[in-house]
Length: 255
Ligand code: 13P
Image (cartoon, rainbow, N blue to C red):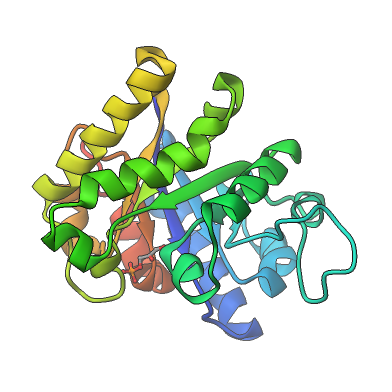
């Protein structure tokens, strides 16, 4: 059976001391207040804090993820961080294809395919993001857009490799806007994604794939979102910067 996961994407927030404080607070609260061991907890701090934070949190309980990695394995690529480097620091998962990376850094399906493969080759799990822009939803193209994003990258993987992928559906219009997709809108898209996976890889893999929702998920709406049968948790931006809110979200599952 698939696992519920709540992942915090810190984006470009926190300086050194703030990162230590936040990670320590999350660690303490998860230990004291999260009773359900079956809910996976992930934090994705900025690269520069990864090593520090893996010393601050119980990495048996909280999985450390990166927010990106290079599309090449190594070499003369000034400023880049390779998947292998991340793996050597104990990173277990990498967020790929976030809409901010697609929009501001021109990430294409081709670059993402390379990144996904490098992450898998280095024994980490891709957290693969997909999601439509507002105009795409308004023109009723949202299913088509998400289908294409998924088919062009993670559906190119072998069955064995696809099993390691976590999908995050993040409608671009809901990210950082305070506007959340309704629980029904999230469920509708998650169900659609699971159906695509079933058609491609069969029902067992579809049932086992964790599909997260992201976009203004917070303590006040997490419970309703997570109560939907195909919503297996969240990829949390803003609310993951507050240990209390983040823990409340982790504790929002009924199932
Ligand atoms: P917010 O939760 O701040 O809307 O961000 C969502 C997101 O982009 C997580 O990756």
